[in-house]
Image 1 (tube, rainbow, N blue to C red):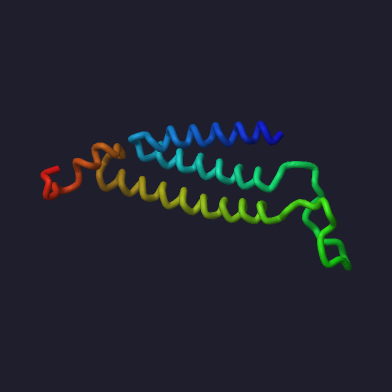
Image 2 (cartoon, one colour; image 1 turned 90 degrees about the horizontal axis):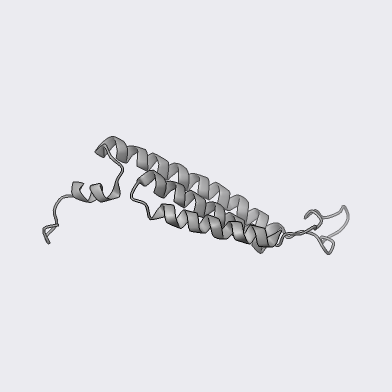
Length: 121
């Protein structure tokens, strides 16, 4: 189980990096989203995958029983999902505004839209 999740993590990182290097902004945003999912998977793997008891404390007990799951990776993944969704939403809106303002989403063509600097480029 952990080996297949690790392979999935590697595949997501590779696909995300490939898409992040594209010239089209929408592909870059999707690559960023894939990398965010891969990081969430890494956090999930760091917590350990196995048949553990839920992270609940029994009534009257002060600490969880041995063998319960660690709730920290779950909290980190939930936080990362929220942050990743906010980042994805912002990037999509930014790409949409670029499309409206410039009429294209090619990053190489965007360099030509910038005013010339002191070096003439």
